[in-house]
Image (cartoon, rainbow, N blue to C red; front, side, top):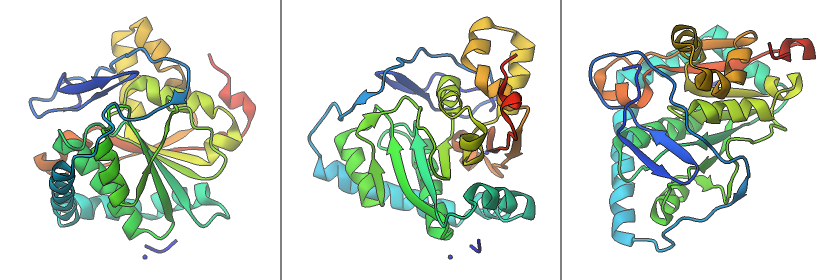
Length: 276
């Protein structure tokens, strides 16, 4: 497998349909209280609300993405991020998930509006750069219900495919899969884990997203029943999850990546999956 992170999310957000994607802004550090948002359970076909592609907006957005990718690639944050990915402990965790497969599919949920906000552009840039850097990262699939037709077109320009079904985060893992989900709602992480709540599936997936350790700390601190219910599988997964927190290095990348971690899951038997 050679090579080829303001803990509190605030209300600068976009909302459309079933998901709420909260984009953090800079400010004083506060407690990261998991936000609970109701989500419909039904998966359903999806198309952008605006079906027309704006060519001028597309051109400008491609340039914005190129700038973001260049900034990330030349940053100390990226060098530190790559160094962590290639430490023996983390690299061996990737290898374990890959098993005998050659490629690790990447699924990006809840990226937000890459046209309206810089943080999603940085997040998407990191995902694309990872694919370019590591030969074992395969195709990238993306979904967020707020994506416009123009944004979807730009994503395709950068080699991503946009899903035509709102999976509600319930992708059942059949082959090794990396879920790239920085700053998504607790309910979305919970849906993903619930859909894959078997030793076989959990061992074939990994997650880049909000720190599960932070969720556990906040649940212990606030003891809010709605938070506990929305994060039930997150909390249960802590028993067999290994978490590696990333460093954001500078304020430039704090809004996009603060409180983010790699999560690897390794339950050995069904008994470990019993919900208390």
